[in-house]
Structures are given as structure tokens and as C-alpha cells.
Amino acid sequence: ARNTDGGGIAVIGLGRFGCHLASSLTQLGHEVLAIDRNGERVQRWSPYLDRVVQADATEEGALRQLGVTDFPRVVVAIGASVEASVLTVLALAELGVPQIWARATSDKHAKILGSVGAQHVIFPEAETGERVAHLIVSKMLDFIEFGDDFAIAKVRVPDALVGRPLRELAPADRYGVMVVGAKLPGERFRYADPGTVLAPGSVLIVEGSIAQVQRFAELS
Ligand code: ADP
Image 1 (cartoon, rainbow, N blue to C red):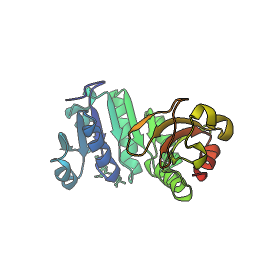
Image 2 (image 1 turned 120 degrees about the horizontal axis):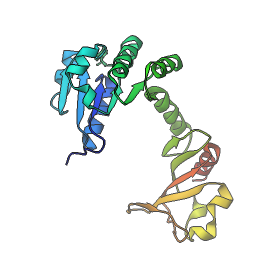
Image 3 (image 1 turned 180 degrees about the vertical axis):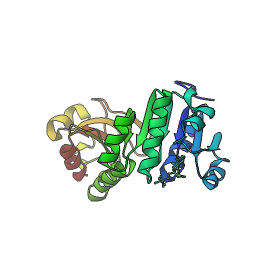
Image 4 (image 1 turned 90 degrees about the horizontal axis):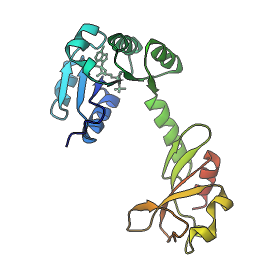
């Protein structure tokens, strides 16, 4: 079933980042229009995406012809060429696209993208690099940071939290982290509540400050 909530999404630039973005959006059920100026890239992705077209996205006329103005959300996934990325965002802004997402490769690039009309600027390399660094040096199994020193992590259960209900073990008081979800061995993730009793081998979703979440992961 097509997910038509909020209309389709156009993805410009089918490099390593853009192709994963376009296929994930397609898997999530969204209508995707993918655009790349490179014919080989277009051919390569045509079997896997609904609509893949070859065009130079810096040209406003080409974007208009492709019907990009019918898309409420457009993502500029071009990374290597700052010029192409900025000119594309400018063309989209001139066309009046309401929600422009653009990928930046540096802080200055991000500033320019914002000033020419991108509402959302993303840093896939910087964010992934930072996240993977945390995973490599800590015992966390997964980690998302939200700014303002707040994070959510997937961690193995420490022995100290096994065998009695969470209400008695009070992880928030003892470790400063909130246990929000738990996956007992062989089961699915569920919300954690005061009555949850964890078993050895359980995996938890916890939230708190970055330092507290990391310290908690070290207990496992
Ligand atoms: P990645 O790091 O994700 O591989 P790249 O910047 O190397 O990103 O790739 C960006 C993609 O964007 C390439 O496939 C390139 O052909 C495409 N691209 C670059 N400039 C334009 C443009 N003006 N119009 C359309 N597509 C473009």
C-alpha cells in the first residue's frame, strides 16, 4: 500500500547516501521521484525505484518540467559538489518547494544551504562518524544523541537489574537513567514498566544524559 501521507518525496543525487535514502523511503511506502544528472546512476537505480530520471537539478526549468513543484518535500542528497548542492537548493526555493532538506558536508556549507532556503540541514557523515565512535569505545549496542546532553541507548542488562521488578531496583534513582524498553531473551521489545522483571541476557532501551547512559552501559 502506498503511503500518501503528506505527498511524495523527491530525492536529488543518487550517490552512496541518496540511493539508500531513496530506497528506504520507497520501503516505507512513500512515492519517490529520484533525480540524478548521471545517466549510469539513473540506469543502475531504475529497477529498484519507482521513478528515476536524468536531469541537472541546478536548472530550475528542468525541475519544473519534472513536476518537482508537486512534491511537498525535496531532499538534496548531493554531497561532493557544494556548488551543485547550493544551486539546487536555490532553484527549489525559487520554485516555492515548501520543505527542502539538504545535505551539508561542512558547517559553512550548512550555513549557505540555510541562507538560500533549506529548512532542514543534515550531516550524514558527521552524525554517523560521531555515533559509530561512541559504539566503538563503549559497550552500548546502539546510541542516538538529541543535543542538550540527552541520549537514548540500547544496552545489555547489568546483573544488578536482574530478577526483581524495576520498581524495587529503581534504576532512575541509582543510575540516573530511565529504562523505557526491554527485550527479554527470545521475546520482542516491550515498554518497561514498574512491574517489569528482567532476566539475564535481556537488552534494554535507556534514556538519560550521555555520561549517565554510557556509565550505565559499562555496568553490563
Ligand atoms: P555520496 O557521498 O552520497 O556518494 P556524491 O556527492 O558523491 O555523494 O554523489 C552525489 C550524486 O549527485 C551523484 O550521483 C551525482 O551524479 C549527483 N549530482 C551531482 N550534481 C548534480 C546535479 N546538478 N543534478 C543532479 N544530480 C547531481
